[in-house]
Image (cartoon, rainbow over all chains, first blue to last red; front, side, top):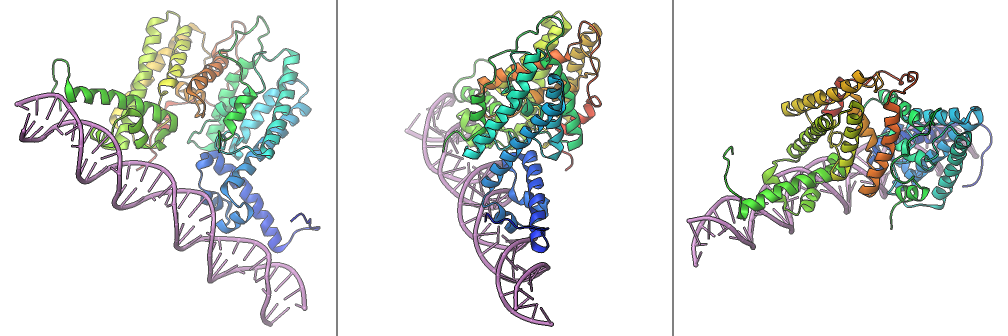
Length: 221
Length: 221
DNA sequence: TTTGAGCGGAGCGCTCCGCTCCGATAGGGT
DNA sequence: ACCCTATCGGAGCGGAGCGCTCCGCTCAAA
């Protein structure tokens, strides 16, 4: 199991690797479109592989979904880090991050909410969530220090805001992404601290990470 | 069928009327929570009536859903008209409308998106949609004339924005409403034309009503 | 007391899903 | 060239859950 092979994979091994990549992309898309209720057969069909091969790779639908969920979180972490490194200005970094995260909608979306609330929390999931929190904290803290982001906006708002910006809409993916970016522009204006005066406070108590944990994991089992 | 009865209803008739009201409210809630996929039995259960009574009133799930869909549109029309009449300022009217529409989330939500895209368009649905468009046009035109609403925002954006502001979230209804209002505040800031300078243009082409028709009705049959 | 319109809910028939199983396929060793 | 076997694809199984029907029961009206 843990053995690594050297050299370029050929033959059946090459096919297995290609299947793996196709499977991953297909699962991304299908889970993003239909959430947990997406049928496994649809994932196999879109990946162009058989059910047998899929179930050899992932012994159950739940394990597949957990894997995709973690991958989705890790992608957000990567996008947050990239934005922080490549954009000098904290505000631009935040905007860049939101755009990147939403643009990936066409490629399958953040995947966070899609399987949320129904799957049990594993150690791996918890660890990924912690890393995500750390990355988003960096993003938000930077903007707060600069004074360009309203102070009553927290890092826990980001995942929920992303979920609000990408609802399930049965429209061609391209147009959907355009609409998401359109409404993102509205939200970004609201997020930015105005140059003069201070913004009116947001309604209600701030979102907390504890809430997200409850939202993302199965309530009991 | 068209016969009206006079005086206070008593006995079985009274029970039928009460059932009707309960059924309506239950259908609102359940469709709002789970969309078209909501099982009819759940609606009957929550209304406290039997399947037989439900199916006497509505011969099929589809007819029930169409009825709720029209009722949802009519409620939005009512809220738009109320906001226009009771609020002297066009901007305040717009804000009031958004708040009212979202606050009803606890009572079942706008219901527009929930059955959207799967049901065929009937004449009644088309008529209700036309009335909704007229009401929203009044709201938006008023704000545009006053110069307080960004010009690249159209009345067709409103239903989509409402849908964006109320995604399906498995959280207690009270907290969900609070979150919706929280993010509405962000969006409202973005909608308002700033006192100084002009706002940066939104990404992408404006939303059109023709798009909504495609989104709300079954593609073919 | 009789009656029947209206009620509630058990269950029928069906669809659709997760998953298993097995014949087909095609590298790789000899 | 030949088998061997790891891997593949997909037909089909078992069961869950749905829309809807049907029927025995209730209770107001006569």
